[in-house]
Length: 211
Image (cartoon, rainbow, N blue to C red; front, side):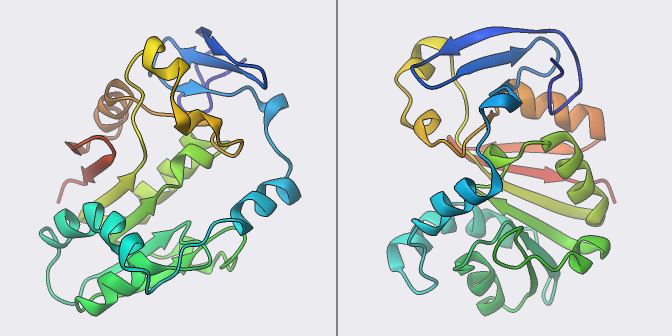
């Protein structure tokens, strides 16, 4: 079994609950669910359709501001960006647009046109997305290539702490969550790709691409 982030075959049991097992990579520290336990596309979208993420919801905007606020500090006026995995209610794109930036949308189910993935941007956002990816290594590399020199990749995802905390962690209970990153995972990824890493709080990651 290969790690979906770094492709290493060095991994071991991390946790098991009544629905599925979880493995941990010995190279990049990613905790992941084996592919045989992933939902199919129809069941996955059905889960996403249950989410109520309204563009104008003040609570949802406050949640997204944990990424938007620090990211805006790194953007020059009129920057262009990609909201990867924006969902049916792209509130983050709206917030960044209101701040004067141009944001393109992509989502595998709700904005599936793939042409934006071939363009380049000053910034890329992926909020509550990477934990859903069956192939995070491929997808994150693609997003990194979408960034222009000096650009920033902003990610929101809850971070793994340790096996004891993981055992009772609500975040793993979502059946669409199949990859779990730790601080060590992001340090590995940043070093591998030559990026400068910032981790803010428990769930905000900024990766700066060299200029």
